[in-house]
Length: 357
Image (cartoon, rainbow, N blue to C red; front, side):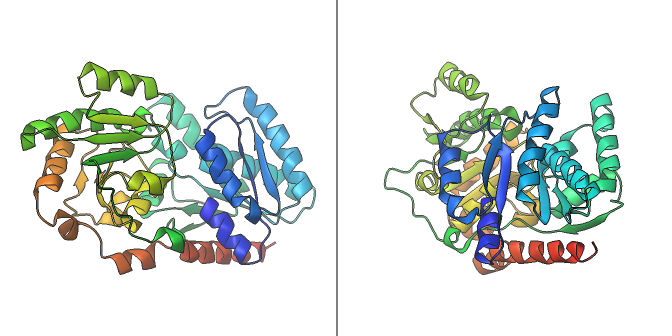
């Protein structure tokens, strides 16, 4: 979102962001402050709960008032809730003869629901109905597109696959400090992202290599206390550190090996950021991650599988030039996952759909 806003602002477009005010930390606040110079239409934060509830009515009303005053040509909703807000409000504005195109990027979101569950069927039915209010759906990876088609159906509106991308300043090798650790996890502290799997796998990795190792977990989230207790109960208080969210470049300086043990993902930015920084990456075979590392990459492990993750972690710290044998070729990676490419393809789609109204 930040990279897209900056790229489009530099291209001469006026950009604004409407988003939730109840999540995040001081770290996210600093990230917003950094892009304020690029937000000609401002930053508008209102309470938008992650789960469905009665508060959604109030959130939708407040969002409508904010967006109506901005009079945008494009409304692009990111994530399930953002998609509902953007398409519903965009359609309401269209009814008042405003010229606005409505876009939606799922980013996983509702696609994580189970088709067999009642809640999943309800969510997928809602997604299907919302296609009528959508000018285009933008998938961030082919996995997300395939999942949408499997669970919901082939979109009845225009759709496109556009990879997430990083800005030029993110493509720079970050050397590790002299006191660097063996492994690092950077991300939200919630079970979906797999920090618990990382902790368990770390213990098994030590037994495999036969000597003590070190690791660090960096992030904030609802399950932080649970992971802290988990580390202490297993006697790893001195070997697995736990720090709050920080700029990713600072975190990357603490280790050469980044572990992404997620149980589910669409296209996580941490994967792209780690590779752009020249780090070795171990990640689960979920979402669009295999599209980045390669379907047959030895750096991929099965989600939720502690033994599989430990096996690859042990191999990464004991095999000479494991990085060179498993990581993508830098120039090809950069050409495919740059923010300028992402922003250009997105702007072309915006113009294409606007021209139809």
